[in-house]
Length: 194
Image (cartoon, rainbow, N blue to C red; front, side):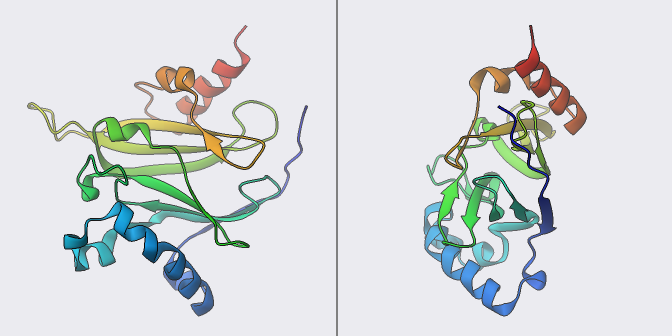
């Protein structure tokens, strides 16, 4: 079944672009979560840097889960397995309800997150729904090339209920992908092989 989703508006999520009421609402929503993502001893460092507003967006579309939503990139690991500054996580905040839904852990968390490189919203299955595609550079921290960043792509596929999931088979195919165009080609090929 094809779903026509012509409406898609993406704006940067930067505090300076939000109204004071929006800033207050987002701060109120995120503050209780900070303790899950950032250790208490991080102090002022966390206040200054746990939200990556350069790779966070306000998304408006006709798609369940992205109707009027903030996609917020944060540094932090709710599982507590990585240093919060070497971690990346992504939260969806429904503007109408204030409900926060974390995306599944990004595959970069197998290593250490270095930097969020790209975020895109694209139809990869050919069904008119948009996946959230995120490239996070990772580092191993091990050996002579341990500090050399490499790309780790995640394609979050939409579910009918507005949540998103990763497909293990697709994620394996994305190993070694370096560009958004290549991630799109691999993803579309995965769903249309045969």
